[in-house]
Image 1 (cartoon, rainbow, N blue to C red):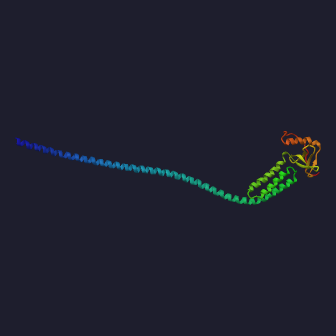
Image 2: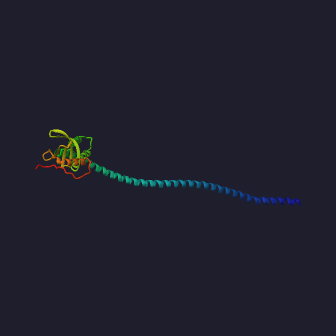
Image 3: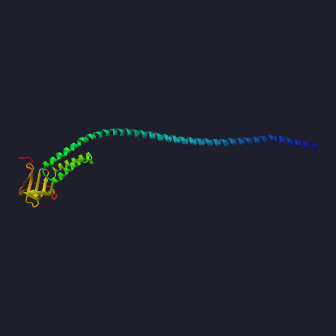
Length: 258
């Protein structure tokens, strides 16, 4: 009986061992599969990381491309504006060339014109009432000197000539009083001069004794009677702004011979 039991136990152990071998093999296969899956996942993760890096790089390049396109559009608009400005500037330069050529012609013509204007003004002053002789003579001399100077622009010369004409025009509508020297009856005297526009030019000695009026027709001084003393004194005070403007009675010069 004992001999039969031992072999049966050995048989059972062999059967159990035989049955355990496939399960072990399956477990090893599963481990291999899991390991392979992990390797695949790791590889997939690495690939995904590479894809993410490439995708980020593409997005960055795309953003840079869009930025460059916007800058390019702005530069195109700016270039168009600059081209228009350059065209306008070229047109202005062309016009300036024409203007400069015309200015040269005008300068050649205006210099003789100014010389004639100064000569005419000098003649006018000579024939006019002899008020402010020194001031007016100096103005004319200054104009003649200025005309010969090269450091003064033609426009400035012309402006000063016109200014001198304007001063002479203003004399005809203003009242003025000033002092000076005048030969009265062969004696040089201090006198007060009174000019009312160009219609009356009168003098009175400082002591009020002598009065006279410039007679344009005879180009000489004519004595005035004492009846004009008070009106002349009043006019002198008005001219010096010592009295408010008021009606005055003064002799009027005759501009032509009777």
